[in-house]
Image (cartoon, rainbow, N blue to C red; front, side, top):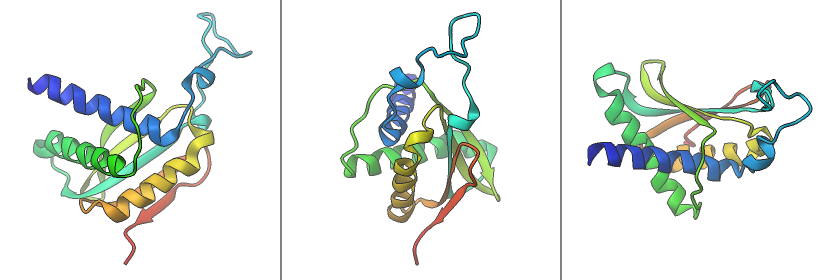
Length: 152
């Protein structure tokens, strides 16, 4: 049951990021002129959106899994309050990150560059509304990262 719950939570969060980015993956992943031998288009990191959210929890290897679940759940709950519907998604990477001694989650949304403004708006709102989040950073392609903190 724990594995099913963990898998379901992970899938829901991945779907959240897809909904945030409003990415049309059928276009983003369609083969183009720069095809490799396997027929797939080479992915460029210039098309990716990277998001790091920092929680109010200390970074500790022993609690990383619990903290990851907590951050995922809080982001999902916030997305629900915003009326964001979930879709299945395969093109998101997720990893734990130490952000100045605090627990953070790094999301990499592949091929979502054109939807960066929507992702940034969501992260700004989430940081300000979700008590457990302290800050967030959104980096679109090769542009400078935008750092978001709670409004005072």
